[in-house]
Structure formats: structure tokens, C-alpha cells
Amino acid sequence: MSASGSPSGEAATYSRITWRLMPYLFICYILAYVNRVNVSFAHDELQANLRMSDAMYGLGAGIFFIGYLFFQVPSNMALRRVGARRLLGPIMIVWGLVSAATMFATGATSYCILRFLLGAVESGFFPGVILYLTFWYTEKHRVRMVAIFSSAIPLSGVVAGPLCTWILKDLNGVGHLAGWQWLFLLTGIPSSIAGLVTLFFLTDEPAQANWLRADEKTLVLTRLHEEEGTKKAKGNSRLADAFGSPAVWLLCLVFFGVIAGNYFIGFWLPQVIKDTLTKDPVAKGLLFAIASGVTAIAMFFVGRHSDSTGERRWHFALSAMVAALAFAVSAFPGIPGWAGFLALTVAYMGVLCSFAVFWALPSQILSGAAAAAGIAWINSIGNLAGYASPHAVGAIRDATHSMTLAMLTMAGAMLTSALVALFVTRSEGRRA
Image (cartoon, rainbow, N blue to C red):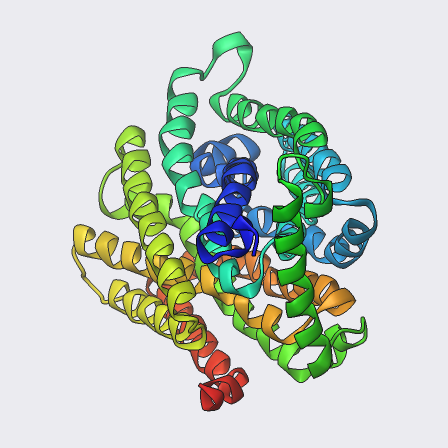
């Protein structure tokens, strides 16, 4: 047996792959997520300068996901043919330019158009990376890798909170530009630069990795072929299986609830902090960063524990239930500001821990072309909650001048996700 074929050698091989790929993908996702949620920090300035209501702000924040819907499946099918490097690089270059162009918005209409275009361009990135990870890692390792990658979501808050508030406060009026215009410009340009780097840095598949030894490549490819053979024996590898399986459609519903909770936090937590704790922009950014940092740590440990035990369904369901309970607690009338902030931090932890584990569920039932299309389709339908959630919350705030009903709605969404996931994966639970 070669050194790479021993347990220690196999661990060293996957460690080498992880240190080569994951830090870079993690940084790219931070850039992507900052470009999505930077509008939450510019909320007040956008409303004042572009003359928008809360409902219109929520519409613009969420219309990103209508553009997101249409291009994910064809993008993932293209990635299988042309490779991650040649697809993800151009995607990043263009989304950075579109995000920066939001500085030229003059009203609600142009703001919404640019948000739609940003979603359309960026739509191939996340499902593309999830598919790309299946080219390198078997299911044994994948939850932890998705958790590492997805921890960019909360850690983008650690970056975005202080950065965005500093830009809005200190660059307002510099060069005759408003702070919110500088915000979109300075958070968009790094994505385009990273896209250029991606064209040269990323390796499409193990067989092309000149940074792996021949025996390491053989090990990784053997493990992937073994897993693929097992999935094909179960069926669900044809393209039609991605759209004909009831389980896939139910997983779309599950992911819809998770995304609704995620973007409630992403787009509205800074506003909740302002309404209940502090109007100081620096303090607001710091509190958002604290909530994000704690959540990232929780994601890592939940993902690692799920991989070490091989258990997925209860890791997902219990995380979603914790989020549902925390959202319900945060909706209590008259809850003190600090208690509400703590409850929403716990809700954020539950939402994103369930997010990290979720992507192990479809990869257990789909392979080949069905996996490429199914991952993109679930992400497409689920991310419609990114449109519905901010828009609905904005409308609720306009109508009730309160977040109570919105938080209860998020609690219901997360509880539904937990229960449906347990139903979809019940056969796995019986086998365990």
C-alpha cells in the first residue's frame, strides 16, 4: 500500500487539498456575500437619497434572487463541461463590476434593476462551488468542507460590519460621492480582482492538480469513483431525476425556510440593532460582527461533529429547531434590547448550522448530471426566499411598525424546514 493509501496518508492528502482550495474559495464567498448584503448597512442612506419605503428597500434587496433563479441550472451544467476556473472567474469579474455600478443608482427603479442584474450574474457561484467540491471530496468529508465554505456567510458580517460603517461614516462626501456610493464601489472592485486571480489559481479537478503526487491523485479519484458507483447503483443519476424526484422538491421547501431565516438576519439585523440597542453606526457594525463571529464558530463545530459521526438529518433538524425557538423568543413583546439581540444571535447560529449540514442531504440521493442540476435547482428555488423574506419583512414593518410578526414568521419557516427534512430523510433514519 502506498503512503497515501494508509489512513494517515489519506488524511494528509485531503489536508493538502483542503489547504489549497478552501481558503481561497472561502475568501471569494466572503466577497460575494458582502456584495449581497452591503445594502443592509446603507439602508438609511438609500432610503433618504433614493426616496424608498421599507417595502421598496426590501423589494430591491430581495429582487437579487429573481435574477438568481434563472441561471443556476444552466451555469452548473456548463461548469461540468468547461471547468470551474473558466466559469467562476468571469462570473466574479462581472458581478464585481455590477455591484460597483450600484453607486450610479438614481432611484428605486435603477436600484432594483442593478440588484436583479447582480443576482443574475452571481447566480452560478454558490451552486458551482458546491458542485465543484463533489469533484474533490467524498460525502465523508463534504459537510465539513461546506461548513468551512459557508462560514464565510457569518464571517462576511465580521468584515462587512466595521468596513461598511467606516466607509459610510468617514468617506461620505469625499470626491463628491456619498458614503453609500463609496460603499458599493469599494466592495465591488475586490470581487473583480479575485475573478482575475481565479482564472490562474483554481484547479478544475484532481487529475489536473500538479500540486498533488501521482499516488495522491489516484487515491482521490479512486474514492470518488467508488462513491459514484454506489450512487449509480441506487439510481437518480440522470438529468430528469433532478426534477422528477419528490424528495428534491421537498428539499427545495426545506432550503426555502433556511434561506428565509438567513436573509432576515442578513438584511434586517443591523436595523433591529439600531431600533433596540444603538443608533451609533460603529457600535451597530461591531454588534453585527460579534453575532457573525460566534455563528461562524458554531458552524465549524457542528459541521465537524456531523462529519465525525456521519449523522446528517438530526444535526440539520435540531439546528433548525433551535433557530425557530430563538426567533420565537425574540418576538416576545417588550423583550429588552440585549435579550432580543442574544436571541437573534442564537437564531443566526441555528440557521447557518442547518445551512452547513443541508447540502449533505441532496448529495446523498443524486449523482452525475442529476447532482449538477439538482444542487442548482434546490438552490434556485430555495433562494426565492431571499426575495420573499426581505420584501415581506419590509411590508410588515410598514404596516405594523414592529418586527414581532416578522420574527414569528421566521420561527414558523425554520420549524417547517426541520419537520419536512425529517420526513424526507426518514428512510436514512431507519437504516441508521
